Amino acid sequence: MKTSCEKPLIVDLDGTLIRNDLSHELFVLILRWKPWLIPLTLIKFLSSRSEAKAWMTEQVGHHIDPAHLPYEKEVLALIEAHCADGGSVELVSGSNHVLVERISSHIGTFASARGSQGKTNLVSSHKARYLTERHAEGFFYVGNSGHDIQVWSASAGGFGVRAPETAYDLKNENGDAVVKKTIHKTRSAKPLLKQLRLHQWAKNILIFTIPGLVMPQLSIANWLALVQGFICFGLMASGTYILNDLFDIPDDRAHSTKRNRPLASGRLSVPMAGGFMLLFIFGSIAWATIIDLHFLAVLLLYAATTILYSFRLKRVAILDVFVLAGLFSLRVLAGSEIIGVPPSSWLMTFIGLVFLSLALAKRYVEVSKAASSSRIAGRGYVSDDAPMLLAFGAAAGLCAVLSLAIYGLLAPNRLIDNALILFAVVTIMASWTMRIWLVAARGELDDDPVLYAVKDRISLTCLVAVAGLFSYEVLRPVWPTLF
Image (cartoon, helix red, strand yellow):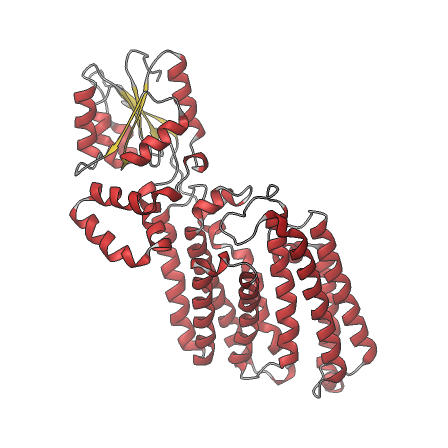
């Protein structure tokens, strides 16, 4: 279908020009920045959706930057083609009028812009009435949802962006289809699976740290409980990752790589993400009550700390990296609670310092990629902090190696009695730590150092070597019974 330049092209905003829905994101921003206003927000929505949108825009609309919204390239191309033919294009949306005008000004090609104002929620029949009164000669319409069917019915034709199939069944007087598919609607689980960050479940292997050190003492029931604990922690982690990414949508869109995340890119809707977040978080808590109450306490502490981190702590320089290191340490503690074996204070010191170093590496990578003298979006750092973060991180990593050496030499209940094996483990850990920071300083480290370590062949080789040496020492007392 080719539009006639004699009739204006009307473009919807939410789900059409942009992949996301601004009203959903405004609600998340209220939850993020002014959670005490949530009850009032819900009351306003029950009273008048248009006035509720205006009120939310007034409260948190400044966090939405038109320059970083996920625009649909096909729709932008459609707009450019209509303008090139000499036609006019208008932006008409159910979103608040202030936001619609801001986005229109940013695009710069719209002849006019109109959004919801007063008590008029400019969707469905309200939008159809507004457009027919404004354009008696007819118009073309680009939309995406079932609410747009009445608008298409009143139009001279139009285009569907992931529209429901019922929209394409509309016929004009000649029996021709009114709506043409511009972007096909797909039902893919990829955005959701990517959002869950299932690869991050590898971090939950830390649950097996303490059990691995007392392997000969464990029963089958212990191992079954540990596997359940691993899955339970994974569900909680995925749920809190969703919460974190919901709160970080504006900041992620301003980031060079994070803007491709499912929520930031608009490929995963806010309602769907919120539903799975609640399912995973509360499902994990329910499962943990069955596994072990002490494990449940650690899981709840992990969840509470993660939520605080998402709300505020991630924006506090230095404190944020200690929180991240603490979240890793809680995974180790969770495993020890399942089997009822308390961890050594020396071991926890070593683990805490290792992950403090990796947390600092994560921040160093973010800061070092930023423009000179700029503040990092959503963080408490500026680009000039990079050298100090490099120093802090390398020092923390080497302190971890030192604590491991002291633990191996002086602790009353040592895991490694053989001095040669201890020397080998310490050497491998020191070499790995130095290499991680050398790679970071060269700018070759990914945004997530833990994920980098899981994928990096040299890191995996070091891990296998250390695990093998530890396993040899742990299982040495039972070797005579096995052979």
